[in-house]
Every structure is written in structure tokens, then in C-alpha cells.
Length: 286
Image 1 (cartoon, rainbow, N blue to C red):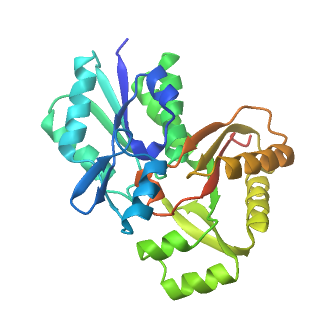
Image 2 (cartoon, one colour):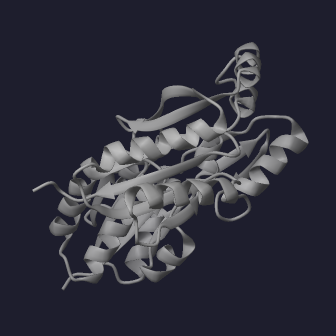
């Protein structure tokens, strides 16, 4: 049996215990504050990211991994005995990571590498990585693993809410005047994953109503379907995500333990601190 090794990027928000359990190789997203670069998972996380934002009063940028970074990851897999490599990347609609992963293959001609566009991000990407890892552990071959990953993509539902417009204004994604008016009116944006991107779905007045709207969206997504996996994502908001999960658990009769993860800096720079979100993977409808 050929040994398959998984490679992914840190935008998958995969918890460390899963990465370690399945020997997944992560290629990090870089965060740039002026002339200083930080590496996700090495010297920056969501907490330290926003401490730097508040301290320096500047907004950072992100940098996708280079093709060489992926080539190094592929070589690491080969050195550990891999015969085949599957690389699952953050949506090509929001990041150059997928293209870099493809370009990295050119440095290792003849090596059996397949790069998959997850068409999603955070734990919605991470669940695809987990699906692949579990399938490999059960002895699936490469083609079977890729089919399973592609199959799950249409069964993933992602929704989130922002408690403040402050960081959208700081980042320039929203005008400061509009953000100020929105804050005064207590507007909370609801986000959804669509076409490989996190998009504004609607605007809700008050944080309590925003959380209830997330629950309603979860109910709509799962109607008539069995829930296979639940993921919870937050940016420095453990209390908020805990409250949301209790609401979801009661509304959807969830009995499984969720996977809980930080959004991670490569993504949280696009939303700001305080975000809460959930991912549902539903079963095929027979």
C-alpha cells in the first residue's frame, strides 16, 4: 500500500491535536506589520495579532506561502516516506495559496502530488483535511480520498457574525463614517460562505438577535438532514462561541462534541476580533 501524506495551509484552522494525530504538514500564512513579518502558528495567533493591532494602531496585511514553501513541505513528506501527496488548500477565490501549491509541484517533477482547491476556508477547509486524514487512516487509496474530499464540499455550511464594525473600519473594508453609524445603530453583520468566499449575508440589530439568526440559519441548513460534524470558530471570543453552541445544541439536538478552533490570523485580519462562526457538515440526502 502506498503511503499518502497530507499537506495543507494554516487557513484550515485545524486544531493542533488533529494535525499531530494524522501527521499533517501545515504551510503557514504570514502576517505583515510594516517591515516585520510574523508566521501563523509560530510567533502569532489571534490573541497576539489583535494585541499588536491595538498597540501599533496599524492594520496588517497577509501573504500567501511561496511556491518554495510548498515545495519544502512536499520534500518533507517525501523524506518521511510518502509515496503520494495530497495538498488541500484554502479557496482560490480568497487566497493565492492554491496557485502557490500548484507552482510548488514544478520543483519536484515526477512526484505524485495532487493539489485540491477546498473552495472554502477555516474549519470548512479543515473538515476536508480531516475527512482525507480519516480516510487515509482507514486505508483508502488516493483516488478514493480525493473523491471523498470533493463529495463533502457541497455538504458544508458556514455562518458567522461580527460583534463590532470597528475592525472593518480600521482595515479600510468599511468607511469610518458608515462604521460609526452602524455601531450607533447596533448593527451586527451576518456572514456566510458562498462561492469560496465569506460574504455579507445580512445585517441584524443587536448581538442577541445576531446569535439567534445564526441558529436559525443552522436549522435551515440541516432541515431533513443528519448532521455529521460540527465545528465552532471564534476570534478571541470563547464565551460567545460557547453561548452559540449551547443554542445550536438545543435547537438541533446535537449530541456530538464539536471541534473548536481559532479562526487564525490569516483569516481574522479580514473580520476582526470577537467573531463567532459555526460549520455544519450534513449527510447526503438519500
